[in-house]
Image (cartoon, rainbow, N blue to C red; front, side, top):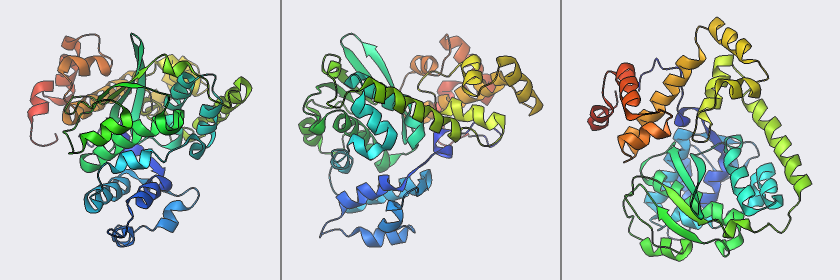
Length: 345
C-alpha cells in the first residue's frame, strides 16, 4: 500500500472497545489455559480492558484475539463468544434494536450505525428473493483473528436479534476461509452446513423470520435512539481537517460510497462549499473517491477470492473495463497482476 495515499483503510482508523477482547478472554479462560500471562505478554489486563471508555487499536485487537485462538485451542471461540452477545451490551444501538418495529429494522439499524461503536468488519445487507443477505465485505484482521471475527459477527448478530437464535433461520452460510476443522459446531449453532473457501462472507436469513417484532417494540423510542446515534456519529467525524472527515465518512459507508451531496449534507455543508474547502486543503472529492475505491479494491484483491468483475461492482465501477483502466492508472498494475504479486506494492 502506498504511504502517499490519503485514504486510510478500515484497519488503519479503527479503535474498538476493550470489552470486545475482555469477552473473548473470559470465554477462553479455563483450568487448562490461563489468560492472565497471555494478557501480560501483550501489555493488557482484564481490569484495563473492562474500564469504561477503554479502547484498543487494530494491531492490539488482532494480537490478542489471534493469541487467544491459537493458544487456548478452544474450537469455535468466536461462536462461543458470539453466543454470549445480547443487544443490551451495545448501548444506544442495542437499545434501538430492542425497540425496533421489526427484526429487519433492528438488523438494518445495526448495519447503518456500525461505525459508532467501532467496526471490526464492515457489514452490508441486500435482498435476494425471499432472503436478506448479511455481507461482511471488509475486515481489519487476518488469519486466526479473521476466523474468530466471522464466527463472532454472524452468530453475535443472531443472538442480538433473537435470544439463542431460536427464531431466525439461516439458509446459507458462506465463509471465505478454509474449514477450521469443526464444521459440526457451525451446523449446530447456525442450523445449516457452512460453505468454506467460498470467496465471500455471507449469512442468508429468511425474510419471513425478520418480519417479527422485538418484545420491546416502540417506534417512539426507536426514533429517539436514531437521533442519538446520529449525534454520536457527527461527533466522531467532527475532528481533524475537512478532508479527514470526508475520508472517515467514505471509510464507514456500507458497501456503496456515498455521493458528494450526501457527504456534504452529513457535514452540514453545501456541495459547492465542500468542493471549495477541499480545494483549499489541496485535494478534491473526486480524487479522494478514486483513492478510496482503489484502496478498497486492493484489499479485496489481497484478501478475498472475489472475481475481478465482482470487485469492480463492489467498489462502484460501472464496468470491468473502467475498473481495469482506473486500477492500472493508479497502481501501474492490472488487477490480476496485482493479485498475483507475492508482496504488497
